[in-house]
Length: 498
Image (cartoon, rainbow, N blue to C red):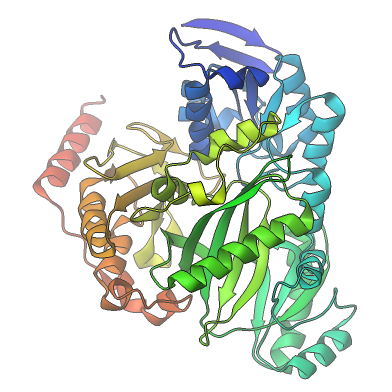
């Protein structure tokens, strides 16, 4: 392995000896991946298949991360654990200095920050995502709601814009009726959001949500939506090129979530019929056209108990759960993102895209579900991925890897496909029992309990599922002979100073 000293630290050159080159990928030859962990590895793999050189970046806490090992080149961002990944100017400067012609933001960090897209445009770097103006509009929840309303897409009752004061909020809430959701205008990821059952709770939460909005998103503006009790959370994956072509890759059901954080995603939703599926797809395409959207995006909806759909938000980036859409359609979404950013037309018309079977994604988090999902960072003493038909693992962990405490607790994604819903549950149970992550506690046993639940198996769940089933976290941990042997071996090695 050749070691090179890069502009901002150690660069590891691992240029592969063999590439599978696509003729049209010559339009983009080198991509800087402005992210870390699992999604950075995913993008590296897409680049490798397209014959594109991948450039990773890493904070010192990530020096031994898998994305650093897998990329063709890797450059240090210095000792800051998070700040380096959030410095748009530094990331684009590095892309220019290393000869990149494109930048992929992944998800999280700066992926929905319009400033990064603007800086890329000024410096001649292709941003693999939508235009900055679209990111800004759809990142502003009140502007997004107004855009959808004008396009004839149903939105939940609520404030037409941001609320101007507590008194304004109280008046709007009284008009639409409690309970309501108080939300940060620039929010996302379950932060800056509170459910208020009455006026007293609204008074108590108002300043708290403003504070969270300022802290997490730098924008102390909030709006109000009518609370929809126990909805189903359904989202649609779309692809749009710069030539006016838009398609959807069907929907994903994200109803299994805890505190607005998704745990399990399913494609397509087992809760929709074909007419509902067609309606949602049409609404998502209409939303994309209304905004002039380009690249990959996700339009999220809530579905109430009366089977009515309401626009929730649009995510202007690659989603964590994109693999399950890939599994049911056979379309590599990351490669399509790169092609679109290169100015190419979509290779598919809507009638060309067919769904086959069901896919499910489990977020394998380093958390202890029996202890209120407390993070469980530390060294992975042993890891092995599951295998067999219809099983895929997207991750950034390996035996001996130390999960740093500075980032999200997700360490892998287990994706399972099967031709039928019942077959999916059986295969997913087998895969979850097949995977091995030792040294830290994970959500694997919790996922198993969910799959064993009759309500889940019947496909009749909603966003209240986790809250309504606290017994799911009461599982007991049984050590198999394999796990016991691994623990004994680790103890012996520790005592021997190995």
